[in-house]
Amino acid sequence: MKRHQALAHLSREHHGALLVARLIQKNAPAYKDLPSTTEGKVDYALKFYKNELIKHFKDEEKVLDLVKGITNELDLLIEIIFKEHDKLHLLFQALNKPCDYPEHLDQLGKMLENHVRKEERELFPLIQESCGETLMKNIEMTLINPN
Image (tube, rainbow, N blue to C red):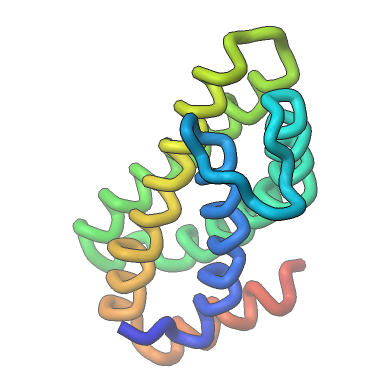
């Protein structure tokens, strides 16, 4: 299914999240110009989280607030997405404390990858199927004018 213009920006941002998710998992292939050490991967993941992912989650949550109450199926999926955002916030923030970094990065990478794939394969298509064009335009305007 082609991504609706209202969700296209969020969808494009998922590319960066998937790259980070793969980079920090165990046995990740080497990526040109990206860190290969555990310390480098921790720093890279934290910078991505602070500089991009926090805002991305906020933008997604604004969209999800707009589409709540349309269908039970969508509401259940929204609830799962919000819980996953909370868990991902905690996992990223835990990188600021000493831990078994390789294991933690692997867990975080797998969860982030699964989360993004769920949004792309389930959430966004369901939003597009469940919401009329007026609501999709409202979503687009909310993301263009965040205030």
